[in-house]
Image (cartoon, rainbow, N blue to C red; front, top):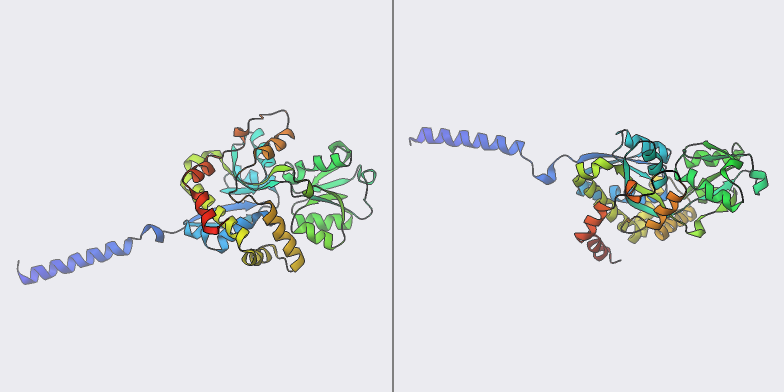
Length: 333
């Protein structure tokens, strides 16, 4: 081949190769998949998500997770069903409520398997007689703050018919409303429960020490996505599980993340909030069957089949591939 023609071929091939290399990226360098994850309120049961995002664990799975406050579990579950969220952090009560209204969502993991609410009352309200006929504020109807009201009232020998339930949104708004006397009582969990105690708000019923099994804060998705977006959900669960292990094992870092995300400055409140998380969080985010059954007992008149509300297949797959064992070994739990 003549020298000039050969040189020209070399230049052309080099140019083509350069164009190919510009357009090619390895799998690890692809743009991350955006995931919109809703929460009912900024509380300590979200810590696994916050840690996974802060430590880059979601990013390592190729995800960019946007955590959005929906100011109520049922509201967020409805947004999930409507397709405006990819994932929702909410208790099983909201799943039952949505599905019985024609929805099709499932809990695929749990970040808390016990009731975490303390019921606080307004100034002057210290007995069942004083509470009767009054307004109890919940985040949204059908949420855990709503469904657990039934249990708190039972401790006072009252029923839901003895009070007026109203939606009041997030925990800070409910705390302000109960302090001012606008409502007579409301359920709160950490860190807002500790803030309420520090401010002298009266505890009417404390369900936390009872350790009642309950799927209190679960990871919820649309049922169709369990098969249709399986890879994405597996990656999200991996990031969440490792975030949970990291939070359980690195107290200093976990408290720094809690302080930032929950805007907690008081070291005492921060200690209580973290210790509450550490005592209650299931490391492998597995769903409590007794907890699910306790919630279903509060919702008679519809399907009592757990599989209509819970799908543990993704966690079962992770367990089978040895992911739980790998996390236990990595974090030495």
